[in-house]
Image (cartoon, rainbow, N blue to C red):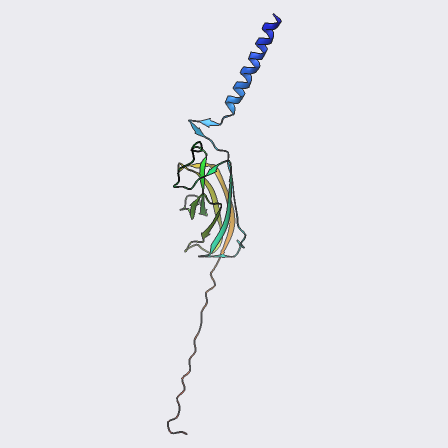
Amino acid sequence: MRQFATILSLSVALAASTVGVGCTANIHDNTLNVDAKVDINTDVDVQSLTVGQSVPLTLSAEGVTLVEPKATPPAGHENDAAYFKVFLDSTSSTELVATASTMVSVTIPPGTKEGHHKLICALAKHNGGEVGTTTKELDINVKASASVSSTTTSTTSTANKDGG
């Protein structure tokens, strides 16, 4: 009887540990739900940007395999392959850049109004969807471009042909 109780308790413990392991895989509809983090930084003065200025950015991501948008993900990473998209003010606007590179430059687009804006870095799944709501914002301020105007003054002198 004692041997039966030992086998029964081991079987229950084994079954419980198997159920625990089976529940830790965060899979829904055969799609891996990636738990990712993203970050965006720059070393330029983001309070004094101008239209047309190129802004170098350092991007980082955790929990994904970075793959260029048009590249094929490596075997085994089809579900966690992602890349960065950087937007100005809204993720519903056209992205300024789509890349897997962690060092990029974006240009403040023509027509950007003076004032406060934000650069938004989002992770996009390699298959085109977003990786949850994984975004990070960088507050920026766009100032009016300094326009240079020059005034040219010319003087013309005429010499007296008479010598006097």
